[in-house]
Image 1 (spheres, helix red, strand yellow):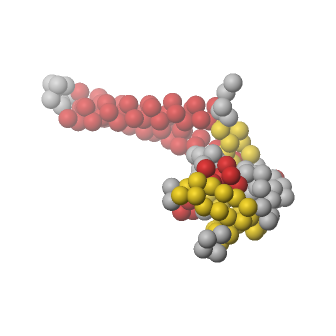
Image 2 (cartoon, rainbow, N blue to C red):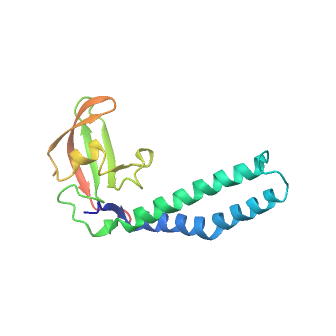
Image 3 (tube, rainbow, N blue to C red):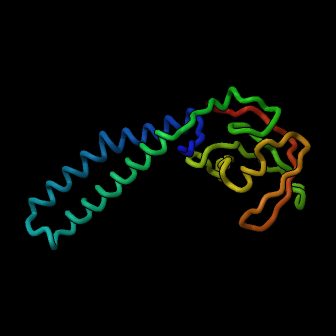
Length: 161
């Protein structure tokens, strides 16, 4: 069975854009760089050639990775999710039980999560423990800083699709 990768419409478009850039621009640029480097002679000691070949390998690897992720993606419209429970795309406000500090995260897929921008992956430990919770529920999650406990104080529909 294929493991689906949840992502928002915006995250899906971003990955498609990156794939298009790599296939239509970067791939051709590196091929030209290889051709130019070949013209410089002996390939064994040609640093430009080896750097271009290495770059080509990285580009092709990323293209394969993006095609795989896009092929397995399950696109979810975050604006259409209900906010009665914490699900993919919702914005969840938590109260840290130890510090009484509020934190707010949008639950997104692993490709688009960025804690600094206020989003976490539904596959991360904290994201998994938040899924399915309702306002008033307690959440316990093992984080890099140890076990942490939170209370869900608000759940909103996602801000982007």
